[in-house]
Image (cartoon, rainbow, N blue to C red):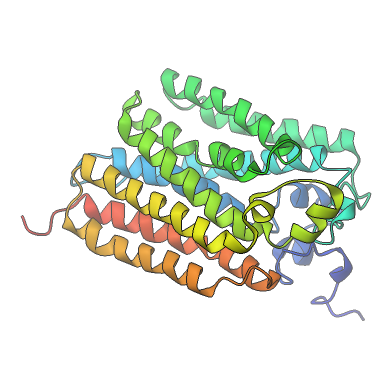
Length: 314
């Protein structure tokens, strides 16, 4: 009898954990759809979600924790809309993914689903996302709908610019605007600054991620910041991460966070420094590990913001 731990090993996508629950436990007929949504690789959901949570936490009144219901709604929304974005990306990249070692086992190039089935799955996820969005105030709904333009543009950016990671940042950090709009019913300079910082963060972590594919990307003619920066990558990342931390600190100052924030944010800064010191752009496994470690950075920033809403000196 076949060992369940080795079952379907040949279908596990390269950057998914060998122990991911989709390949181990999900029904076979659902696995291709879950993989279209990257449920077997949940890090993207966290990276999309944290800017939302940061913004909600910053907008919360002093001396209070963020609204738990909003946290849950945004978590569901990030889960389904990240899945929708990945599904759209796979539809757009169906003629490229089969030529790249890391992506050749994705459901469309491997023949597990066809384009029509992928579009049906895309529509289903977008419907759930719409139902979540309709729970918010009218202004937030308008802000949320506007994000669709960015979601649509990103999958095609690598065809015309060496900065597709910038367009990913525009889409992935939009929650910095939407979270604030949901809590306050308006937009101010604070979420805009946070949005800029989030974009810089994405430019950093997704450049690290892109170094896994740089040889294949060069061969098939698509672009990335990994190819653009090459051996100067660490210098660029340092700049991006300085912008990220600086903008978050400015947002903390503008929202009157307490000294607790400034103490705890040092942990997040140390984490980014560790990434820079550990990075080897020619080691694909290390690039993937460092990319995934940004989930911890997001958590550290969130913890610092929430703690900063309270003043222990009073």
